[in-house]
Length: 57
Image 1 (cartoon, one colour):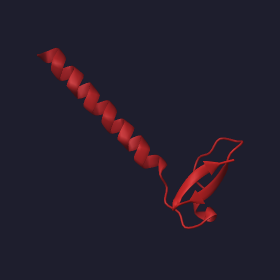
Image 2 (cartoon, one colour):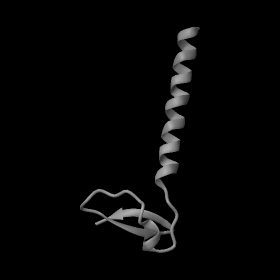
Image 3 (cartoon, helix red, strand yellow):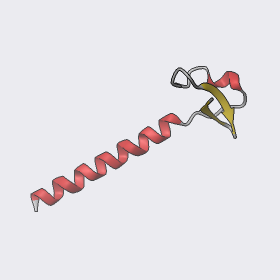
């Protein structure tokens, strides 16, 4: 019983962290200037597409 509760608790914790990560990476924007703080790898460029900041080539 205790092992089952530990597994359920761990799954809930991991799912909540995953959802938080998804919500944290979406940044709303109106223009490309709003995406200054959005993290992108070096070869990609920050851009505002469909109201969200995204990394594009």
